[in-house]
Length: 51
Image (cartoon, rainbow, N blue to C red; front, side, top):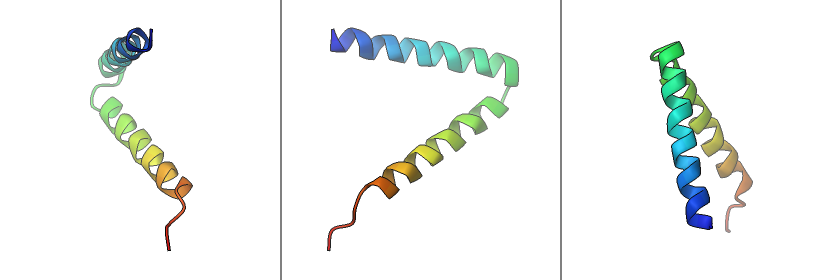
């Protein structure tokens, strides 16, 4: 079941990306890049540094 959910998420994400690209053209790529940057910053802030 975990593999099915992983593949379903991949298919859903690619379908959503294709639809966004059709509607927004290259702006959809910038939105995805900004979201990835925000997610990376959040993950970096959530990790406590080791001393």
